[in-house]
Image 1 (cartoon, rainbow, N blue to C red):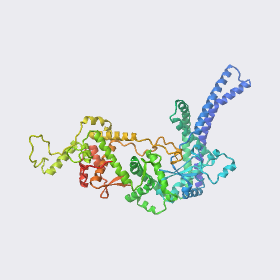
Image 2 (image 1 turned 90 degrees about the vertical axis):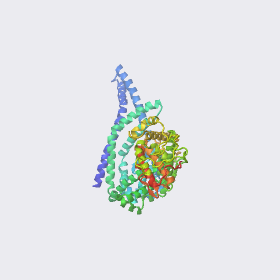
Image 3 (image 1 turned 45 degrees about the vertical axis):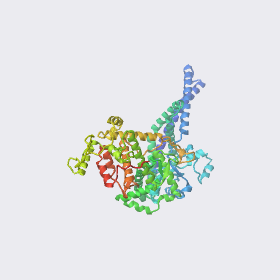
Length: 629
């Protein structure tokens, strides 16, 4: 039954591959048709059958058309043949650095009765696939022990590359660290089984044709000079037309290959594969959470965590501790992890971590003074503390730009120092805070209307101010605020105060200026970096983790950073790292998890009541100065 299933999927893939090749043949026939007509006309004239002025004119016209069409077809064929197909960014794993991993993959290929992959590479993603890298632009193939077969057959290196080379096996690096050896073998079985259908000549030729067309479209879309742009525009139009014609057949061909590989892999570790698939989903969730919550703040600070794959294990272990559904996953940690198949897992983890930072954030290709690695032990101090203090400093710079005084009382001590009270008072909506202020005053003074019980002697010659309210900071006119906040009203909401909207707009502009002043990242020198010569890094990051933060999110993050700085400097709080939620504030060793809604109440509604109550409960002094970067 299994053999019939494999044969059915393979036959479906071959039939679709032949359909793709027929489209290629038809395109070639269309290119040769004018030349064939010109040859017939010339032959008819030489034999005396097609004579006359009209036939002579037709021979001239068709001869010119044939030459032009052949030239155009030659240019298109040259571009398709010489264009470098896209290759996934990976970290190449040499056999010397992972002999056990290569041995496991070859044993798996022998059990599946398919050719073994030619090489193994890692990608910072939760996926695995086979990738064809037989194009001459991808460099020389790794030497194999069976190269003498090619010499016996008398094939040239280019010919042997296209007929005998197996694809490269690309493995997601989180799988190696989270999965056990048996689980990894079960997950890779359907992938390795795909080398069998891939070795069929028709399927390989169809894939090369489709990949060449795709590369030609990319070449035609690249910016060029006016002459080359006009020539490549026609090449791109023809390549897109052929791609549209064979798109459906190519998709069905790949489905047939996948079906054939899945059917063949059922004979190997089928029961274990069901359990391993659960670990695939869990690893994907932990990897996504680790990148967005933990790695991204470090990348924004110019630091890149050098042990991301090891962090996945810590994150998923923490998840298994919190989530009752994942209780059984932690017990697997006693088995042999798949990363033991590597000779130097730490070095490979560092390489994949740097590649992840380059792909998902657009960082430099190699470490430097402004792009340094950071260990997990140093993360709270080197990333969390620096991030909060940098954001707090930026927040106060914007407040200075808006003309907000640092202290309402010029004679108060530390009146020029940055304080949390300055931020809270500026964002407070007087209408939302009026009831809270009068209630607090009434509770302190012991009167129902909030007036003082005993005012003492007063100088009647000097104008007095109401003593029932504390002094408030200087507020500039609302007109400039409304003008600056015009573009941020939608993201902050119609009920948001002009002060919050203006501050959000100022933070957005300040952050944009800082990013514009950052020098562009350069590529690694030739021969260095993770397969840097195989993919184009001109549009990094290739896979942005998150869209740009809105003004409301920026304002909330900066206010939260200011609150955390005040907590660290006045209440003895410490920065911490939560594997699932990223930077966190530790108060007396306990995570402060209820800060976000209180900050949003201040930012969105202008109500400081919940945040002030939280500060009082934890003993945080908002009027005290904080240390900035």
